[in-house]
Length: 257
Image (cartoon, rainbow, N blue to C red):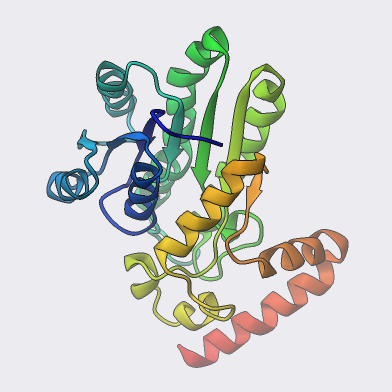
């Protein structure tokens, strides 16, 4: 895929994977709009990459409409939308309703609302690309965090539905599912940090490189950690064995905590 001159939007671009995606797309010649809840972070990435910053909420109905409208005003057409913003809040069965609501809003409804804004125009103009930053947790699970596990599964599920429904009409949909990545989310993972880093914690730039390679062949699942494919196959082929392994891992974590 050649993004030279393409209009690209990256949400959650102030730090981590989003920043790395914005930098890579700009380096490849794309015209980039970066979004983040943190205006200073968005502006810093915009200055660094030559992008345009549109700070704000990329999850709410109003925030998504504002972002897409501003991006269209600047770019003319949005060719690629990286729905990258995400949150990891809520631990255990007692995770409060507020954490569930925030997780659903940012990790799921942000994608739904963006797709509603983007897909009708793409169907009229020949297509576009919608790239969801999900997680290996969306294919497997995330011990300790039901909110993250459930909403990342939902993010992958929505991306699958979007691809199945509109892929034949030029809408390319992809889901990025990394394990441990050296971001603030990993730094704040506590005892799970060791688990997430088991197969090597990647740098955000490594994930951006995997995404770039995934853009070249339109593969649905982009797996920066190749081992995730093996875990995913095991989960599907022998779910009880896989769950037994997860329970052993949880028991180890219970001992640590």
